[in-house]
Image 1 (tube, rainbow, N blue to C red):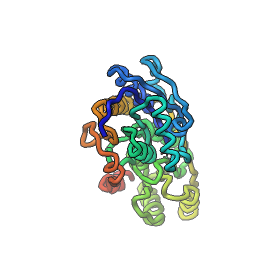
Image 2 (cartoon, rainbow, N blue to C red):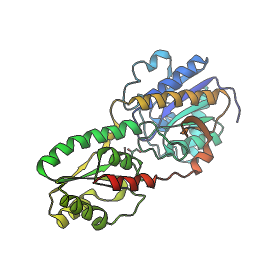
Image 3 (cartoon, rainbow, N blue to C red):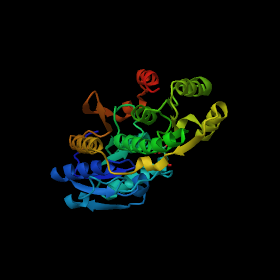
Image 4 (cartoon, rainbow, N blue to C red):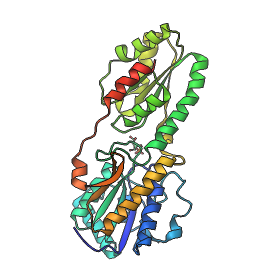
Amino acid sequence: MSVEIKTIGILTSGGDAPGMNAAVRAAARTAIYKGMRVFGIRRGYAGLLANDMFEMNIRSVSEILHRGGTVLYTARSHEFNSREGVQKAKEVCVRNGIDGLVCIGGDGTFRGARDLCNSGIPCVGVPGTIDNDIACSDYTIGFDTAVNTAVEMIDKLRDTIQSHARCSVVEVMGHEAGYMAQAIGVASGALMTLVPEVKYDLDRDVVERILYTQRSGKSHFIIVMAEGCGSSQDVADFISTRTGIETRVTVLGHVQRGGIPTVRDRVMATEMGARAVELLEKGNGARVVAYKHGEIMDFDIDEALSMKKSLDLSVFEMTKMISL
Ligand code: F6P
């Protein structure tokens, strides 16, 4: 698909992630620099269907680089997930003279972008999700801020569980993947991290580790658990029944999605947002921007959606050896 792009739309879709604003800013300013008109589309594909958009200038994206969330708002649209929805979205683009889109979000956002591409509107996806679960990319915008937020919270929890000699089961986000949990577990020194990718046995992997380290003098215990691993309350109840140690659950929840983006997220988002526009400018629709082997690159959107990513199990094993 090679069309001259004169006007682009930018949208954020799915769960918000810190750094999305930096990507919006970079995409808008790169496009304006290149002489394009730019529309900011509110509420993702839902807003596109509702024609909810505004024309942007270089000042429209002032003072957003350091802000969490997304100034374009976000949503998950059921209507868009149908042939009719995609056709309607295409018509809205055509009516507004939008001949290319930058779609910032996760897998669901990319599937939407692929469908719109197939209907004739060039789209480039930018990976924005705290989960870091986009297969074609080693990094997704928001991950660094989210894991730092979680680790900061666990550092605080450590003070209270140490004072009470308790066990703390901390449930973290990550959708169905353990990328967040693994990074958080390593950085917070959790005694054990439960991830959906690795089958666990609570007696062997949690209770025995607690009792073993207790015998070595440890008096407080942090268990990090990915949300995709089941009920954190059940795990906590199991631990207290088997060990007699008072155990509390903390579900960090959506606090992990907010906050000021870290430098890493701002830099990644800026590079990725700019790259998305450069791809559209060159007539490359149907692409996804990625960070792979230390470089910003891009993949065909179908190829990106068919790729698989897996958790680094050597890190998982190494952590079990160290976090005692
Ligand atoms: O994809 C980001 C994420 O925060 C996941 O980690 C989590 O499973 C999900 O979104 C929560 O979604 P919602 O905002 O609909 O509660």
